[in-house]
Length: 320
Image 1 (tube, rainbow, N blue to C red):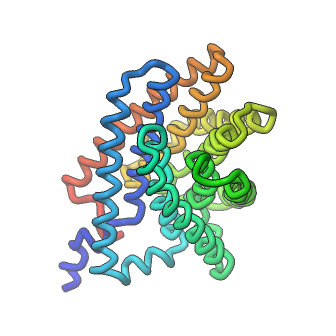
Image 2 (image 1 turned 135 degrees about the vertical axis):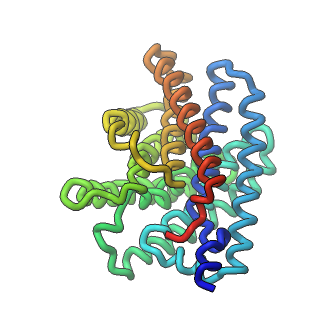
């Protein structure tokens, strides 16, 4: 019986699979903005929109089935000091789909944004309460803790037109505040304690996401690139350069589903660069936009290939 349980792929279908949707959503929005601001063909973004939505539906159906068949396994993930943070990837996926559909299909966008916002509000409260009530070990802290925080900053990016500015500022304020707090915790852990488990090294890329997404949301709310917006953009650029300088830390890492953590933050940086170019028409912003689009596309191609390869080898959705 134990052997059968260990080979049951459904039971070990991880909540981290929603990072696949986050990554593909980031790629989709990147090509939407590239079509808008750089003249890329619209057909690329259109195709990616349908693929991303289909993957979201597929992952959701599988995880819902897992919940009914192996409820204790889901509860175990929800009480896990690391995996609990990845539940916010569900609501973030919904919010990103709301952004994808916003321009051409506002009704579909609203169908994703309202439940996504409510779910993320609940998950933020649930996760922060978990951090407070449970004794957290410093070894459990990692950049994945930013996932529930980034969702709060992301809400205004899709929420303009769906909610008033006061509500959007609430989420933006919460996200910005906890970004600073969690960053302090993570930096302390990285510098003064043991190195992270290898499979969580790709989550270092999530350091890029809060300032990059914050920059986009701030512009969406106020329509200006002022000093605060420039601070957010430059911080996002700094973390992008930082992980680029650390490339040796990543090139030899064995594949884990956490590799998808590379994609979303890089896509956020690509979108930020294109947004900056749309406002200042600088050569630097234009070059950065093209470089980031190329990097995001390359990383997604590699991660998709590795994901399919390891699915065929039955090395995903297995007991750890």
